Image 1 (cartoon, rainbow, N blue to C red):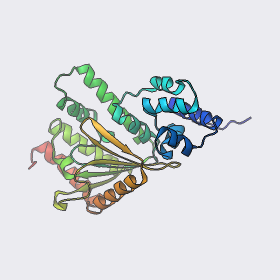
Image 2: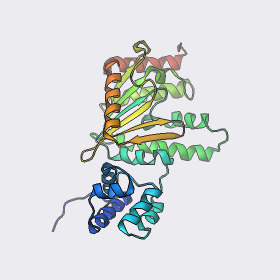
Image 3: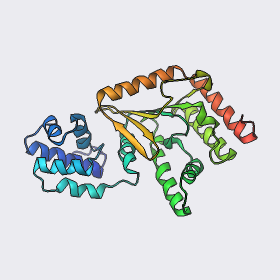
Image 4: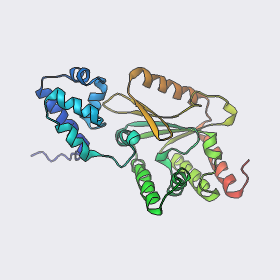
Length: 276
């Protein structure tokens, strides 16, 4: 009898496994199926691994290709995410990534936000809101931090423009607490922290928020985000260009020790009113 402990399959993994079984039964390779539904073979691989879900139109094409009579499109409705559509796949992928490299231009990355900081962010761009709506949004966002509780994976690199440290979000106490939290995670070895100082001038990521994710058994992806929109890229050339831009920006950043000192200093300046 096999007593080996196995990680329970998620609903998305079950979806992916069923897709793989139906594809093989139809006598199709990942490449052949990707040609039929007009996507990359890498994307089919992500679907079958449970890392990503097809969009409704893609699920409809999968059903036509495999002759499954709407099966995958209907099942998709039961797997809806609590996150916005443009971010739902990213939220799933970061739970499975081996390495996450994130860059933030003006805002603390959602993965690292404290409850009070996140609440201030949500409050700022909602013209009308209720306490209940803010509470729900904060719970969803801060729930992503569970991946920080493990001692090993994912390995997280965090590159911050100095503007992230200087903008006072939620008030001096909220901002100070947020920056100290980031510093504590770095000092505990849970993330690698670097800051791009104002003195660096123009840098390779000056125009965009960027997250890079690598996996143990699948191709890497890159994600860029703007207001109410995001773009998840898996095309090798685009991912490679994003990785190069990150490396270039990182080369202009302060060392981890210098970055920690700057983050701690900024936290104290917020708290004691010495921000410029």
